[in-house]
Length: 307
Image 1 (cartoon, helix red, strand yellow):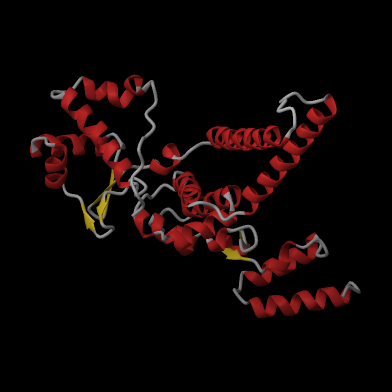
Image 2 (cartoon, one colour):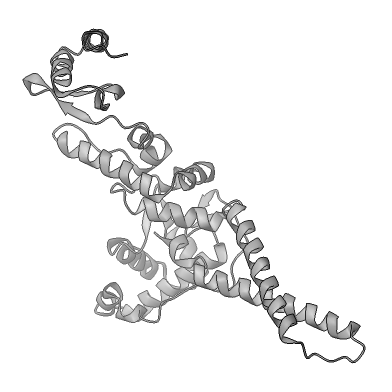
């Protein structure tokens, strides 16, 4: 578990949020809201991506939280039930989690840029002090040519910093924030904690849009087979289920004669086959015999004088 952070983000319109407004209409509203704020700050101290585990092994119970928060256990249980009902927390295999914790608590790009600018300015001031110390007249004034040179130098240094940032390995916060964003796209939110850090890094390398397309393809297939097919748990899909639906692996279903749906071989969509050839191959596919379909493809190509 990472060391705790010294601050957490809370939006200024938190008390305008409809979930908080609904809580405020309940009995013990103030106490429940205090417990929510305590839960957020405790998640920051834990710095475990909003997953409440002690030493990454023992799940925090309502009794343990009541002791830590110094609140009545029945009040804590009421608060946790309320938070779960409103989607403010998820309980996955008896582990309390805060959805989207990493997405909302990591530094955004603007703040990172400000930090980088602060470092650059501090470095530049140190260089200027060094130059002044070496100058015989101790004069900080510079000619326009020197000022222009400094600007060019700053630009080059900024470019070097950008290159280093782009080449570096993504931080755990970046990877987790990315995973939170794709996890939101998937409807069955079970087993989130079972997606390892290694797998999350692999998903990060694939990218948001390819994974979004993969999820949409999978959900489309589920709708077609809704009478018998159930969606995978989120952990199953993001550990392995997504692979068949990536751009480079996905083979779309095609309806063939008799109303059956079959997966066509990857060469079926190539442009060198015309509509008559594809129709002939589809007829073969209705017999579920890929070997014979392959043979028919070769015969057709030979007949049309194609390699």
